[in-house]
Each structure stands twice: as structure tokens, then as C-alpha cells.
Length: 140
Length: 66
Figure 1 (cartoon, rainbow over the protein chains, first blue to last red):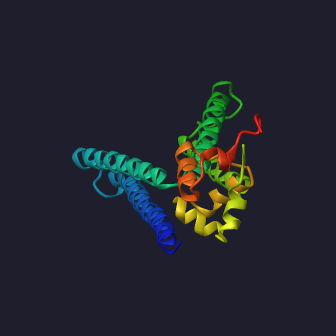
Figure 2 (figure 1 turned 90 degrees about the vertical axis):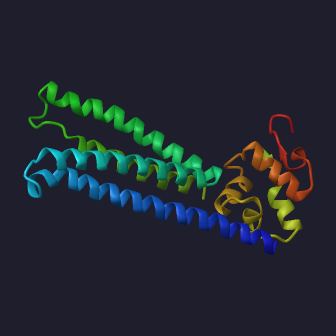
Figure 3 (figure 1 turned 120 degrees about the vertical axis):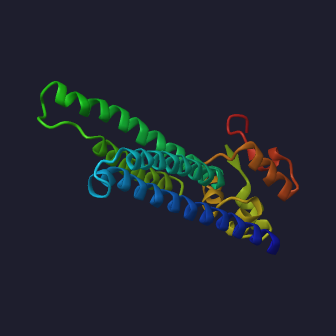
């Protein structure tokens, strides 16, 4: 069993390493998002070349983050993968259904402001967190 | 699906953490399988059978046929 406990440490190490890697990619992507959003106005006065480079960097780093997330998910064990899948399905479903209804609110003049994509992202993020908590409670 | 994982583990005096490490899964997964909340995949069932030196049917039973 001593040898097998080492394997457990390998699983924990793998998950920790992949989580840290994903956190690094996510942080970099957030920084790239901020740069692409505010750079044109505050740093380079809407100069076209740095703006395009900022957007390209944002996209490339975004795809890096997706790859890091895939590695993270592949490194989890099968129950953890199921919890993640359930949470992501919930977030996607709620995002789609509420997102369409939210968008309709302006069209049918129930709200006066324009629906923002950031609101939908926040809703999906919160739904995903709730899904993860519910999944972990279900299988604890 | 029913299983004898808890009994087999107890017979060998292993903790859930030790069994989890032997099967390369988390302790949460072992706990969920033992409580019948989660059915393992076929590869995990095979790994369990190899570890306990039993057949899969000796460890996992379909509730509809048992």
C-alpha cells in the first residue's frame, strides 16, 4: 500500500499542477482582456496596429486558456469529471434560456437599457459555481 | 448497482484514502461508489477487480439481476 499512496500523491500533484496552470492562463487572459478593452483608449489612442495586436494576443491567450482547461478536466478522476460536466451543462442551459429571455426584454420594451453580454457571463459563472457546490454535496 | 467495495476494503484493513490511491481516484470517488451514489466506469471496475484479484461480478452486482 505504501507504493499506492505514492500514486495518490501523483493524482493530487497532477490536479494541483493543472489547476495552477489553468489559474495562470485565466489570469493572463483577464489581463489580455483588460488590455484589449482599455488599451486603445488609455494607452495608444486608438492606433490601429496595437489595437489589432491586442485583439490577436487576446484570442491566442484565450485558446491557450481553453487548452489548459481541457488538460485540467482530463487530469481529474471520473467522478470529478462528472461533477464538472453537470455544472457546465447547467451553466450552459441557464445561460442559453435566460440569455434569450433577457435579450427579448429589450425587444418587447420591458427594460429600457441594452442587455450586456457581461451580465450573461456573470450569470453563467455563478450558475457554474452553484453547480459545482451542488455536485460536491450530492457525492460527498 | 450494488458493490462489495467497503467489505473488501475492510477485510484488507485499508482506508478509503489508501484504496483511492491504489485505484488512482479521489477519496470522494471511493466514498460515492461505496454508498452507491456513483457507478464506476468499466476501466475503474477492471482496475478494482485486478487490485482485489477478483472478477468484476464478485465486486459489482446489477441490482436488477441480484
